[in-house]
Image (cartoon, rainbow, N blue to C red; front, side, top):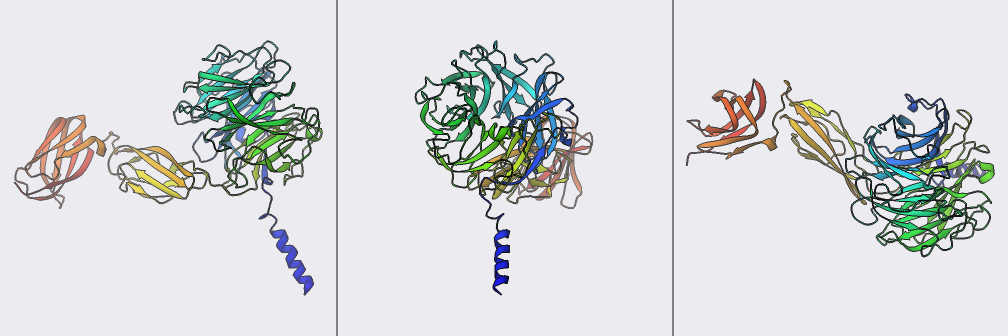
Length: 607
């Protein structure tokens, strides 16, 4: 009997392992190589180092899933190119678009100053030009001693191609900062939100070799909606609170937005020193910069092998901090958490640490992920360089927990140095963050009296839904997935969804076009008025289009035609009672036998 109890206890404990899985470990993963079918249509034959830059760029195609931008190297052309990858909820690639010279909306004469460094860093910048599609910033840090670096802002279309772009470099697009040869300006880029509260997102740009001896700097660029620079601030070892930056530290190697970590109303950022020497040569370290609205520093927190309560050992020349990203609030304590890589760890197999932060910027706990550690069962080989780039992709698989992507840029599965990246579905605490509203309507164009179904695709766990259907037989709904919303009049209407949970609300809209069978663009309720209605002697029917040889038919409740006005021109129709009894009537306004609009009329007693 005791033996049976023991067996049941063992089974119970084993069955609970997944439930009790430690926050920050890997629940499952998906590996993406250049042979993935999602890259069909793109010549991947000579592609190397796939995934060596990764960025969550938001839901570009509005399907409810985050999309990513990644960089790879075309060895036959000797230059880097950017791929916009549209993701499915399981992490697989639905489709991809190439952005390079003459492709993806760039002109054939698009040639960056340094083709070797183009795309080495990428970040979403939100919807900078307010056209409903997120835009991206791309760094070109340069590998030449004659070039200091530049960045590009690409304004995207919903298909992932470039609508237009702006270039920011010394003396260009309003940027008057001094960039010297070998500064490596653009080695990292990061959207930091609207720091100065002017309604436009701002960015941070790393220049890791600035100020001689590789000390490095970070430029805070305050932007305009056209992608030019309004003003800027430079942070380096001459800035207050940064005097301890080390020579050869590569300050600005990677940058991540932390949100308002210390709850003072201003966003804060994480900046790495990928070659910092704290605790040992080349180990790397981190700085959390608590910012003011003007881009200056209020306070600094340091995380290294000797600081910030970091409880694991780091290796000399391991380059901890080569890549960083925010994981939002992975452990459910209302404080942003982070992921940090060390690409030269363990013979350059690479490793990442998911670090759970306190609000003062020190470590609460950590979870390391590498081969067979932290639930990650992939085989990493020496030289794979796992963690060259990191990005969060929000809650991709819909389990309420932030997921992330890490590359292995020299992975050889698809060929020597072909590269790969891993979609990592993490364990953590279900997060309630502000929803991102999104929905699908069964049709975008219908005929009069057809009906439409609506399906909610909002992310981040909304708990209530509020719909508005302009022109519909039901003007609103609180169902998650309303159906059979019908439209009886031709016109162009706006469908609106507000998705809400305890953290806030978000709104999404789509356009629905209703046509009559003949294809004549009709009038909606906002373009036709009846004044007065009810009426006793006469009324005016007023349109906002010019009628030509139109006909107005009046019917009683039995469907009999009781009055007709023909050859109507102009925009106002005078309808006289002329002996019609009191009661309810229906009318049709026709032009060339096409029904423009129908409606009701009520005739009351004569005064």
